[in-house]
Image (cartoon, rainbow, N blue to C red; front, side):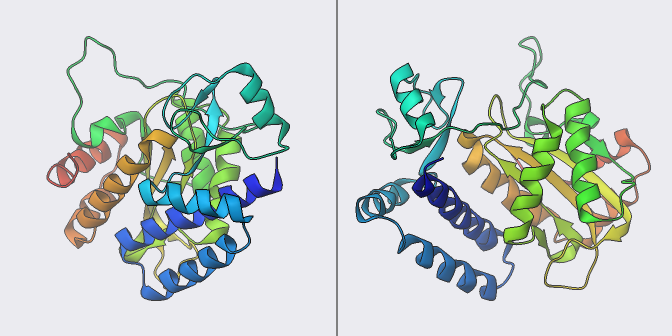
Length: 279
């Protein structure tokens, strides 16, 4: 991968993390640290790329996207083979001829492979658009962050929603090294971006004893939402994050989830408490 492309991917990740922090209200200190890191990385871009990055950023915070099945993952345009080969060669920074976003070629990445709604089924609403009763884990067995993420990722794979759970775990843990996804009230939102092939997917796990997710506070994390996010669903993800954060600031809502004993009960509880906050 071209070193500037790798730099851009890391820079974009910081920008998106900042967007998350603004929604979860995780503290001004984190925002200041992210602003400083973002500015430092922007200043190291070549001048022409710097100008293009800033121009694209004004329109959308997704400025560099993967090629997925020979198409731009952002706008869906089918790319010519010559351009795909050029991007894969990594000798320069290339842009999508349709949406102008910069492109990169992921050598390996998890993909969403199933869990799609049948045409005969009525349209799904609320949290059902993003999850399923099969992705509920009312009693996580793991006692640490890596184990919890691994348990939820492999649950997604086992239920046929994604492939390559091991890669999903690797990417989620890499994201955690930048800044913990734990927030107040014992919640955490570990996630992986760029999981193409379908819509945003959410799994939910409950840790009865609590897990140290490495956040700034000392409170253990008990409610873990694990998300696989395709490029085109970045805006949906932020809306979902906002809705979940709003819902589970309420101690009663958290207790409803924690008190469930089986998969079906957890799913029904999640649907009920998010009915007014997630449309």
